[in-house]
Image 1 (cartoon, rainbow, N blue to C red):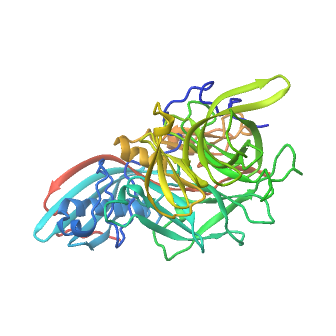
Image 2: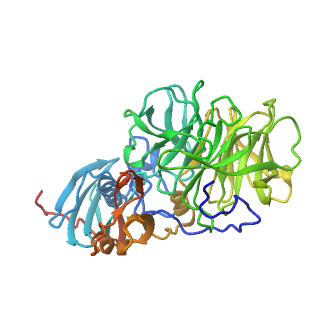
Image 3: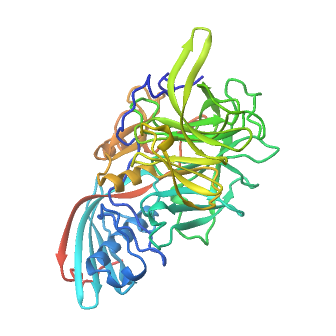
Length: 512
C-alpha cells in the first residue's frame, strides 16, 4: 500500500497542530461583483459585507477597493495579461450601487513581474483613491472570486447545481444561497454525489456513485468558475476508483466498498499533507486516492469502539482546525446519526493498520450525509431537515451538538474553502508558497512536486544545466515524458498599500 508518511490517521499517536498552508493563499482575494452581493473587500479583515439598504451608504474608498478587487479577479481569469509594457486602464467609470470606480494598472518591474495599481472611487462629489503594488505570481488555481464568511460549497438538487451557502448570512436577511451553475460531467452521464471536499488551492473533488457503476472521482477546477449561475460548471473525470493492489476488486456502487467519505488532508504536521483520502461505506476502509487517475491505495481499517445500535455506515469524513479527523456514522436502520473521532492506531505483525474510532456526539434521529470543519473550531453537519453545529471539545457529550436552523439543502457532501476561511477568521494570511514541478540538477529523472517561496520562482524557471526548467503546478503522470497538470493560473500578491485623497486618475489617459 502507498502511504506518504507511513503513519495512520490518528489523533493520539500522531500529534496534530494547525500548520502552515501547503498551498498558496493570496492576500488580495479576487472578488466578483453581482447584483445580490457587493464584494467582501480583501483589505477588510472583519469580513464586512454590503447589501440591501447598506448599498446606499457605500463610500468612495470602498468604490476604490472594489476596482482593485475587480482587477485581481480579471488577472486571475487571464482576462488581463501583464507584460513588460503593460499600462492600461481596464475600468473607466464602472458603476456600483450609487458610486463608480476607475482603475489603472502598469508594470514597474519584471522578474519578478510587479505592477502598480491605482484605483479611484467616487460617490457623488466625494472621491478617494488607493495605490497598491502587487506581484504577479503563477500558482495553483484558487477560486477567482470572493465569498462571504462561513461559505460551504456543495452540489445538490435536480439538475445538480454547485452552490456556496454562507452560514454567516443566514440570519442577516441577505442572500445566503449562491448558485455557481449546473454541474456537467466531462464524460457525460448522471450525477449522484456521495461526498465532496475542497483542497487548499480551492480545487474541489467529489465522489460520484451512479447505480450499476463504480465509484468515480471528479474534480472541479477553480479556474473554471465564474460566479455566473447561468453558465455550467464542468466536472472533470479524474478516474474510476480502482484498488492498485487488487485491480479486480472494484468499488461497486451499492456494495460495502462504495465510497461515501472524502477529505483532502492539509493541516497535519506530517508529510501526508496534500493527499486525498476516501472512506468506504460499510467495509470501513481508508484509501488514499491518486489526484492523477483516482486509483486507490489502502491505508487502514476502521475499528469503532463499542458502537450501539445496528450497523455502522459511513457517510462523510472531515478534518478540523487541529488536524483531527471525524466521520459521520449512520445506523443501518436510518434512524440515528453520530460523529466519531479517529482516536488511536493499532497494529500487530500479522495484521494491517487499524484506526480506532470513538464516539464523539449524536447528531439527530435522521441520517446525516455531510460534515465539514471550520477554523472557528466547530464541525458543521446536516441531515435532510436541519443544520447542526458540533463542538467536539466540550466535556459533556450530551451538549456538543446544537441545532442551527431548519433547512432542506439535501447535500450529500460539503466543504469549506478552509484556507480562505482561515484568512477571514484570523485576519492573518497564511505563508505564501507555490508548487512547482522540479527537475533536480544532476538527476533529471527524479522529477517531483515541491513547494518554494514565490521569490525563488524565477531561479527555478530559468536554471542552467542539462535538466529542463521547472514548471509551475503539480507534476503530471509519467507517460514517456513529464506532463504538467494544467491547473495553474495567475494571481496577485499585495506588496504595499496606501490611501490617497481625491481622484488620483483625474485627467489621465493611457495606451491600450
